[in-house]
Structure formats: C-alpha cells, structure tokens
Figure 1 (cartoon, rainbow, N blue to C red):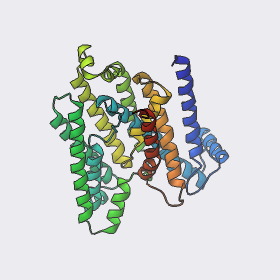
Figure 2 (cartoon, rainbow, N blue to C red):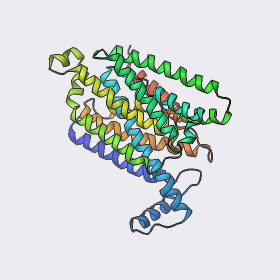
Figure 3 (cartoon, one colour):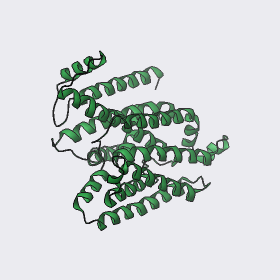
Figure 4 (cartoon, rainbow, N blue to C red):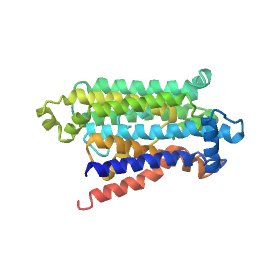
Length: 337
C-alpha cells in the first residue's frame, strides 16, 4: 500500500477518534446533547467554567473517563501487538504472561481483606500493581536468558493459572457478600471512578510504549521473519524479548491496576490493524493505537448506556463484541485450511 493511502486512512481514523470522544461525552445515565457539550467546552476554553450539573458531569466524570478509555484501548492494543510479535503467535494477547492474573490476585486480596479501605482510595490500585509486578518478576526469572517464544508462552500460562487459582481461593474464603461483588466487578473491568489524576499516569505509559515501538520498529520487523533469520541479521532476540516482556508487563500492570481486566481488545485490534494497514511496525504502531482507542471509547459508551442507570462491566462487553469478530477474522484467514 502506498504512503498516500496510509496517511489518508490514519488521518481518517484520527478524525473518527476525536469525533467519537466528543460524541461519547453526551452518553450515559444522563444524556447530554452534543450541542450542550460543545457549548460547555467552548465556555471552559474561554476560562469561564460554569457550575451547572452538566458542567460537573462533563468535566469531572465523563471527560477523564473517555480520555482513559481511549488511552487504555491504545495501550492494550499495542501490548497485544508486541506480544503477538515476540511470541510469533497471532493468538497471543496482552495477558499471556499472567500479568493480569497477578494484578487480579493483588486487587482481590486488598478488597477481601479490607486493606483497600485502609489505604483508600489507592489500596486496590497498589495491590493490583504489586500483584502484576510479582507475576512479571516470576516470568522473567523463570524464562531467564531463553529466547524460546514457546517457553515464554507456557510459563505465562502457568503463572496465569496459578494466580487465578489464588484469586478464586480468596473469593471463596470471603464471607462478606459486598466484598465478593466488589471483587468480581473489578475483575470484569470498569472505568467508573476514573479521575483526572490517573490520566497523566496512563498517558505516560502510552507515550513510553509508542517511543519504544518506534525506536525498535526495525528489530520487531526482523522478528517477524523468524528468530533464526533475525539472529543471522545480527539481532539479539533474547535481549529484544526481555525488553518487550518488561515494557509490556509494566504497561499492562498499570492499566489493569486502574481499570481491571479488559479482554479481547489486545487480541483482536492488531488483526484489524493489519487488515486496514500493513504488518510493518512503523505502520502498525499508529493504526493499532488509533483503532484500539476508538473501539474502547465506543465500548465504554455502550457499557454505560445499555442498561442505564446500571453499568455493564467493560470486560464483559469487550468479550461479547470481540469474540465474534475474532472468530470471523480467523475464519477469513484460514478459510482454505
């Protein structure tokens, strides 16, 4: 595909993303017309923020939530792309290393034991991050200097199963129904409660991820040729694998610690990006992040609008939407097999 078409598609996706974020502000348990949203934003940009209910809903609740949805969608999609590259397996997703299971165990432990209340409002986030960090350390430690993608995937599967078992044991041992419901809701993912203080953290993670992929885009392309070919061309596949594992794990740890476990985004979006763009990482970087952001923004809109005023956990919704799309993609790619 020529550069002109790629730029045109990327520009179109960028416009769709910004339009989606503006439109999404109006959806929720209380609907706000797009014209009212634009007026409130215009007033704010002029330095005259109002104290109306609409203004509080828009600026204190929905805008930070929508921003985080877009950022987290890009993060999950990019880490999914990285894991599919480094494992040489297009069925890989961001959670293949067991990081999400570690985060789930840490978060549920804080909720069930009451630690989350002691260190409120950051108890769950800290517990989830520490659990994810523990899972990362174990995976890196066991994998060692091996450059085998199969070993890496199998270790991740083992760690994921182990931490998931611990999580279920924590929930099973709890006698407090409210704590169990809170733990299960967190495990299914949610953007409720997102605050402005979380946006800089998430944006920093996304920025670091983009810089990493851009700097090592050629090395990542070489891995797609096969590990033997990449080594013959002078690439240290072991170091590259370790670097990808570390930065992906850190990105997922922070994202999951804030929003919980959100499935299928990191698995499906890279496939869609390859279909729309190219497999080169210099191109995939932008298409994957933009598509992931758009999809997550609209998934969040549906999650908070489908059964309003109740909210559907975002992880349930992404699984319901992502699974059929993923099966269709697999069917198209392997229809002659």
